[in-house]
Image (cartoon, rainbow, N blue to C red; front, side):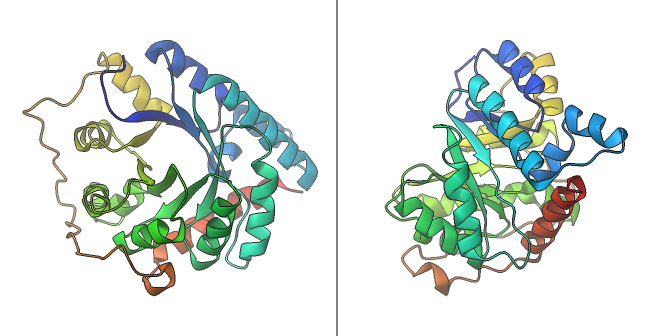
Length: 282
């Protein structure tokens, strides 16, 4: 079933789920993962249940093994996330990115949408490393991504809609707003709808023609059970009581350092990912 313009990724840490999705759909374009999802991998959970943790070498070896499994299943892209906490420098992120980019020709490296993450990404793309800017929560962050990666091709920006919903804001508004803002650009950044929490998120992302949508297997399976139905002309996304995020006219021609890059949810996301990764290491 390929009568859609969006590329479909699976969001998770278990290659078996991605294999099942491919069997159901015929092909899967890509895979996204992160330290939290890797920590939920069945092999990791079994090891933790035995009271065993990983050395730093072992956890990176395991991560690489899982990434290579994903790469053998999907057609195009596997997003790989370097370790970063609030103190990790752009140099440290970039050095990890260089190593991870050698794991597979399908590698896209996930950089946090922070000052240090954007510094690392702007250097990485000049070296030919493909970037997925993660933990994006605002139009200004997306505008900064656009300018920090000019000259590159197929850069991803990943707005996390579910985490905005969690605090009462309409995360899907942000997807619509970024897509509208990028209409003025050159097309080198692709909006990747991330943190999809429910079937209506998926339907609305398809209706908006989000270039990429990454879907947890549970929601992908729900879509499969509904015959991979698509939003028709009667579909209207209902945000319920979620607060709208208004569109802002933001120019795309400023240096990336001139945008307001900080967002508290980005900081919270980085802390969560680093804590989940550190929990695995003895």
